[in-house]
Image (cartoon, rainbow over all chains, first blue to last red):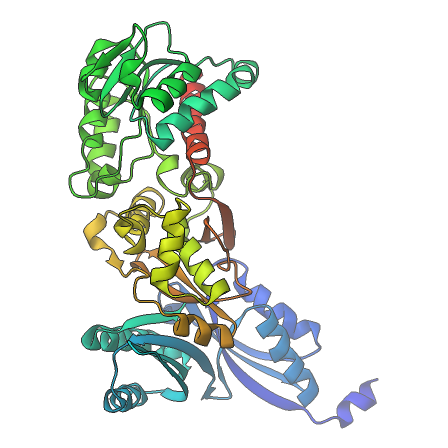
Length: 169
Length: 338
């Protein structure tokens, strides 16, 4: 077994996790990693860098590609939030629906406004029009860090333009 | 236990009905006999020290439109406050209509009862969402029990659930569907592809929406309930004006369609946390606990120790709401025994 393991390519991956500041969360996050056979190289549990009720945890894990991919799958399955992978922020897909009277120009303005936010990009747009109003679905890709600002901005846009804003729960 | 039922609309009648049908069980299980020593509606009252007959109260109300016409013991024109001075009782069941401007007549009724040293059970959201702190302080100073499970979620357990069944947990947020009328309308719009106006009409014809549906469709009813939950469960001091409210009146069938394409439903969601106090239409995944249809209510409590817990139940209905009132009465009775 040992000889075979030594010949397989060992990769390292660093993940930034966001855990709830509650007893047992760290163990719960490490368990799926260990269970798939990945080695845990370092863990930096930064309780001082706490934001709200969440604590960032930086871990470096080691294994072959298949094992590392499996580790990520298991973490995601367990609902552990992965904010960055190897220093690259992972993006989340957010859907929002806007209802009201919007001209084509105003719509372009809204898309530009959203795109101007750091770490945020409009990925898709669907428009349905009725005789009285327009309904627009916007799909946005955003880094975890930018989510709060994005939500605030969307509600601002809605309130300024007199639109009904329906965001995800 | 002697109770006065002030307000004899759907909920008041439900309470009378519930008391009648649980007579045997209450005696057997809790050694409790509930006597309705007085009942009042907008036109008058009925008072009998030995206890009014719930069946007769319901019949008179149905046949003559007011319990003021109860034979022998009826008093036309007597109002709730007068009743509370006319009779010996233990607990006021205050179920008058919700008034979100002044909280009256409910506020004066429960204030008087508490000052007179009586326990209070209510389903009324008006005074609670406007004057929560004041009323709780008064109850404490007067040394009386003040319970209001029926004011949020009807039969769905939430306030007692969070306070008594989960004392180990800190509840960080509550996200839920707290209004059955709007949930019904949105569910129908989703099923039929119909417009809001059309579906509202349908709901009114079925008696699920009122003739003046404003409080429900503008989200004010859910907002009142949010205030009560924020105060009672999260310990957050706030009133109705602190809620960011948006109703369902501008939701289009196109919005529901677009949402469905990606596996979402549109629901009127109440979100309550230390930082958020909001009622507005939101997108929820069809596979989430929020995908509850019809007139049902639901609430997900996010706790520190127990993770997420979801309750679902019937948010409205005469007997359903009365069940919560009866629960509170029984709990007060049990507390008084200790």
